[in-house]
Length: 251
Image (cartoon, rainbow, N blue to C red; front, side, top):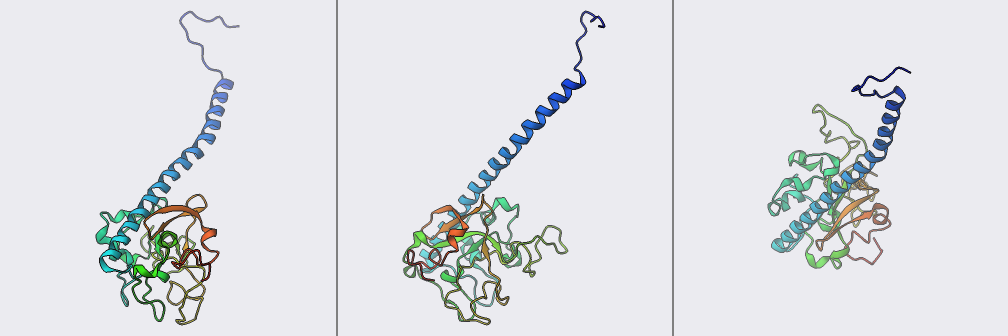
């Protein structure tokens, strides 16, 4: 053995360094997913807070106008979020932090991450429910969806000439028509092609869905002002959570 010189520090061997690196890698593989889940839980909580604020804004609108906001002013892109915007202090509330999208009022809200239960709260299309819905029409506000995480009509990411921005008129885009959410069964509307036509205003069979982006579920805001996380499967069994008459299960 080579004698150790007094005052000289012993160096790590290659094996010792590899063991330390392996331990660090194992700890990282364990801790990073935990940190990611914790970060997502924080975003989910922020999203839930957004929903509660939107519910309060919708309530204030209904008190002032004695009816819930229309999906849109007929023949325009002045949508429900434009109508409740005066009751909300910051437009950032209209964007779910888990999506990484920043909200703006451009493009008619087609890149929205929160959708409105417009089929039962005020539709402006054709011969659907195209009149403002008064508060008295909703018998169970605590069980009636107002706003929820929306995936829009598309399920893919796609880009146009502006990198990172949605191609607003392409139904294959994530969050396209995200300003609305559709119930399992289209209520009382015979416009155009019939019961398979939803928020796209012309594309049969395409609906704007609630997005299960929070741990397999979505944050749902109800008309009485409360919000909670729910499994999306429970919301699509029938129209009971949408029609204002829960627990009546009929569409």
